[in-house]
Length: 300
Image 1 (spheres, rainbow, N blue to C red):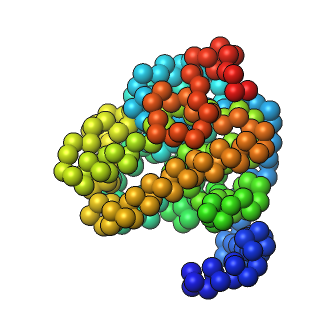
Image 2 (cartoon, rainbow, N blue to C red; image 1 turned 120 degrees about the vertical axis):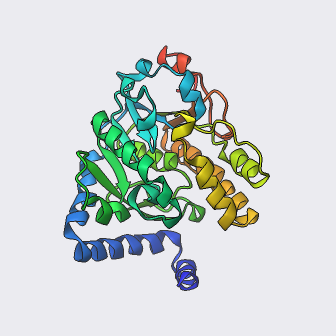
């Protein structure tokens, strides 16, 4: 099937192919589940809802431990994944949360052992009181749960390796990403933010994967407590099931994705800036968070 899709894509060109795919997915989703179709279509209300404003996207890298989250209480902030497991998560007053990994929705068999942490994450996310963006594939799982959380659904289906084929549109398929931050960037773009700052985005998991393969200590990968960090188990599963060539290629896609969104934002006049003190994301403009908050960012 993939070979057939690629052949059709070459014949039509990526832009035409994805235009047709969006129409097909609209019709298919409306027929299969009208409620989910309406939820995805309802994302149109978010279009340019924060036009011209700035936002901060917080990954879960260890540098967050050194950040006073209270400095960002009055800013529009996105958090991701296991951020609720931080002891001081409520200091931030996150405005939106994003979870994309299938493990959160029972879609990854090898991650079943993470159930207790995932359940705790949902409980703490409820206390944060912000909406949570999730993939459309999560709908069957979440529709049977009773979480006191406003879930917003996004469809995923455009490959960044095909280049920029359309503007970001949360009512259609959005671009695939190798990590959750690349999805949050798209949400922020759609909402009209003109300044997007990253924090806690070290992107050093490649080092943890290599150390796992070598049987060495992986160190502190995330900001939350080690006993609440399941990354060692996750990386062990990856190393056990993937060839090293696939692991390295996946990491290539991670950094290629950040390059893609840096170029996309630059072309749209959007400032995408990494404020993480130490990060492997080298192709993106950098700034110090203190300078940004003091209005001294030279990149804007």
